[in-house]
Image (cartoon, rainbow, N blue to C red):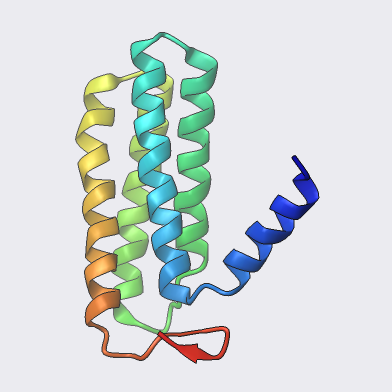
Length: 132
């Protein structure tokens, strides 16, 4: 398989996404990695568990860093992201399945809320110059 072709395809796909689609992609990855952490913890695969939690933390930090601070909701979202980061740190240090299982639905709820907000925004979305 030609990896360069696949990488180029991925780059073009991401490059043509709307900001809302990119945000949902990040949240999907966040939820997926939290699920992977849970599975790895069940299998006592601690390196995979820690890698998944670290990736979750990286995504949450990125989401926080890219907030547009001119909007009041950004302050609330930043606090939520700070809470997620704190919990992820606790989960990683304690290998705490119970805390992870409490956090996962919150991450999924945030993803779902952004999905609904994007659908209801009323802003026509464009991709490659075409309205979608």
